[in-house]
Image (cartoon, rainbow, N blue to C red; front, side):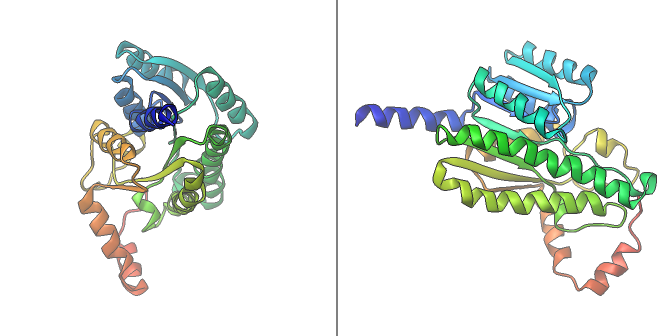
Length: 265
């Protein structure tokens, strides 16, 4: 009985201070910032991205901070390859925390609405599934683990020109919130992260106003702190959250009026 208590305490401590962490889309943006944040705690990190040069630079920076780093160039849209990679990571070191972060913001004006929708969903939705499902299968075998899905405040209020991005984030937001209740009885925690504007290669492309934009380091600190508390929904910054909720309450006619005045990216 005493031994079981100590095992439970050790497992809880592992969740609050995860030591084995997998992050997709770790070569830039929020993924990079989270990798660097957790690296300072001497974690074992499994990092993937599509750009080998940037990924190697992040991996080296994390290693310099004391982390044990394994990196792989991965396309999250490749279901078979992702399952093989995640299974291999978990066999190397059982995963405490998996962060499905990889995402793209493809501009409809550049590729057309159909290509933007299909290509965005392949990464932002299928890529999340290809990360979450293999991880859940592994965590179920030991009745513990934590999944974090990066959505966006854009999931609440889509704007013209970014419909595919907003819809993809709305999909994984809703799925993640439902999955939290599904997996809770099995000892697996699920959180959905809804950032506002965070400095990244994606936001650096924007030529419009980005109110309340946060640096990546600040976003990573807030995310890690709230994950440690097992918050189901992690949304920030609060002024942007308040603005989004206000916009959601407006009549569609008012939304149409505002939409006509929003710049198309």
